Length: 151
Length: 258
Image (cartoon, rainbow over all chains, first blue to last red; front, side, top):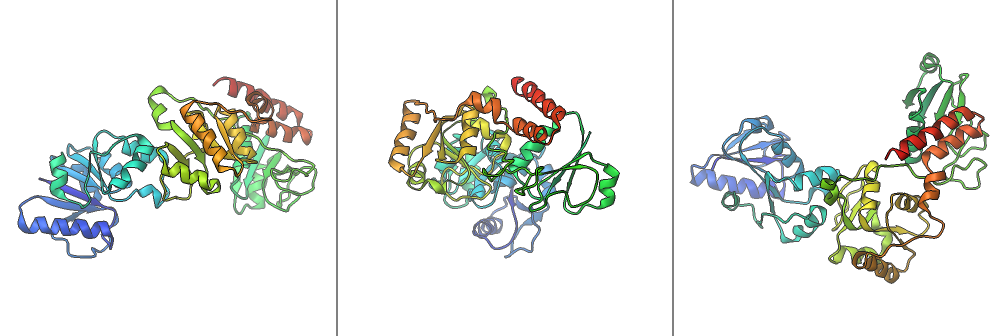
């Protein structure tokens, strides 16, 4: 499935490590159209065997799936005027690590046009506490197939 | 009349006073950081209101009346913090619109709400975080615990207070308590007795029990203890009764509109 994954940056992080491994696995063994975009165009921490686009490309990414991994990224993909399906794979509860406004968190988490996927069962309660939304799925490891099956 | 506001440091009380004065039909200027004599001369203010500490008048000489929101002993100095000061302003609330549209109600609803860091609540915090209670708290400093909902605009405080079943507050925190009462919130006061506080929270959540605090009355707060009243008091004290009356007149229009 045609998929774009949005990164905050391309440097060392658990999320980047997990997702790049998954992408490299797919691009090696299948013909799936997978690409990434990064808000911060830092030098990639590892080999990424696929195209790395500027975030501007998100706007013209049609007929596919765009996956965000943070509230900030989700805000960006929701602002795009394309017809791709949108998913938020919330790796961490962002607002607990850097200051964010409740309005922004609430508006993204209650947005019906985005599938909400959590990394851990433990994240369900804090999110339900904020906006009374239950996730569409919980995936302990980032899995493209898991996300595709959901959409 | 031309009024210049000079912000030395961010202070919510000072901002509330500025906002109230701003609603009059005078001409206003705003400054912070370095200001030149020339800039002041060009604007030619009649009144300068500033919060520079330890100064008995605005440091740049001009013919303007200097109103000092600091703790000095000058007759034109006013204090938010020293009750013993001659010109103590006292605690007050900033009038906010607490009404919420029905489609936004869910956003502001909770069982328990607190605006600030809840670490002061000790065992009550443990109880709120570890039980099935919809606890929302807001702070500019991220907290990695259940219930932390990020930051919220001061304009929304009242909406959260009004739509929570209980608004926790520590005993002696007059400013928060006045805010809660003025917005029709249900104050549950914590006075270092966690069991009692938890019991009151549970009664508020399960039995919809409402609490009142002696000495805190909504009508009284709105009548005498708003930022408009305090701004008016400042002008009256220095003999500018006309502006003082103007502010009080606006208070009525502004508040009763809502």
